[in-house]
Image: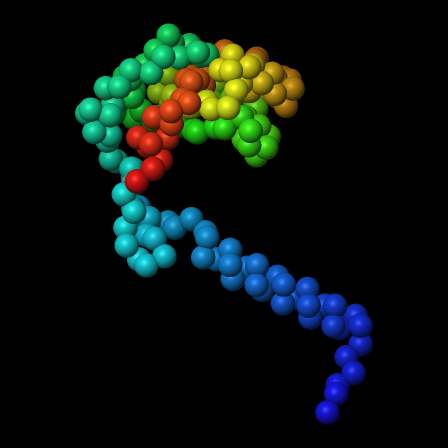
Length: 172
């Protein structure tokens, strides 16, 4: 028996099916609200969670800054009660990274100013000259938020072509 389903209904059913397939796939990819996060098999993934500190050996590595309000830093420089360090990892060849860079730079400068240095933003740069990437971020921030000053002190940008920061803080 062949059922004659009207075109509009068939199209709606196909769109619904496509949505459900995408939604079910996305559900497996959502961020977990646990820390450490669990992999697909329910096994904890080595992670830095709220309240954790980095290992002393990792926190004492000196990073030279190519842009921002300090010539160099160690993550241990940012330790202390009530202090927060936000670490980002950018590759200049990534369109999403380039699109969000101005927002990141703006938020970094505003939080740094508002919390009087209690919130530090560190960015590992890959794929472009550090000075180019830093200018890109700051100029985009000024274009997107013309009523605010152009970021100068934050984020602290480092060259990270060997992925040292990424491997210390993002790779298990």
